[in-house]
Image (cartoon, rainbow, N blue to C red):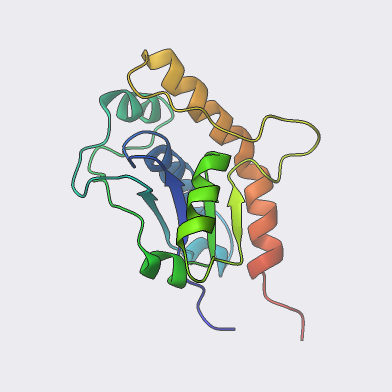
Length: 163
């Protein structure tokens, strides 16, 4: 099986939600078996300015769960990233729509981060930008809630097939 491309997590400016989700997913994958533990995870923003620093409240919210994202710098989402990605996970339907409208080709694995949650759970993760730390922690917790269902999806997608 060829080495899968990176998992890309997308939000608006790549300074709040997607860096937190990138940190959470990379942390979760690191504890798994091959080939999942080696899946690269990156993040980008549909309107990101290259090099912008991650928001202080995102850093603080992640520090509370033992993950340091302080060195993250924003990157704009590019067609090359989408072409190389094994899967793309967005925070909101508007992010997914922007990608569908602008990408050629559209990535076949284009989902919301919370798409795989069972039942009627809210699928979108609202932007905490400019809000208090509690808002960032709530966004982080919505991401944490999605991680087990994301891992199950990735296991199905990338687990080695029995010979």
